[in-house]
Image (cartoon, rainbow, N blue to C red; front, side, top):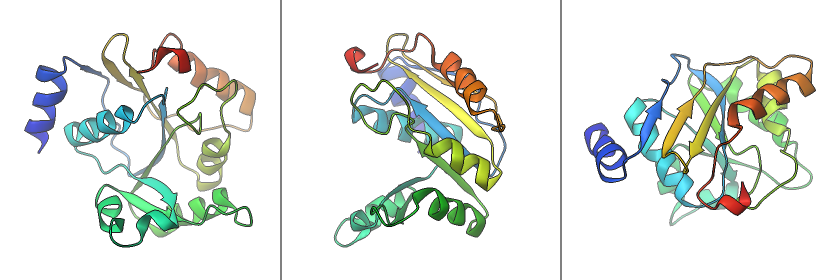
Length: 178
């Protein structure tokens, strides 16, 4: 599967992979910008190329028959996202339960243009004691750029400046949403 993914990503689509995925078993992977469903396909290809399990969380209803097995096989973990649940605490609990858990999230929280990122990924990483790995999907340059792991500090503003700097100039599939 790795060879096929690499062929599609590099040869057919002409994309380049910058950096390498760190040799760690637990982290929060923030992937941005998230502007299109195509981002998921790029992510699946890159995951196959780097040979690492990367997971995602989704509302528990997605994991019911008949399609639940597909989402699980793609690395999905169900979570209760209702208003009465604490998604950060629930996700931190998943990190505690699993030996390998690399959670991919979109810091925007949507595919539309946002003025401000969500902060859940930051609090998940801090409370779980895991680093953040940044992955930029740059459709302008046809590059996927992977950072080294960075542990969040107690200075959220400084951390977010570092995160934003990594993604500076990156263009999403739908540039107007970047």
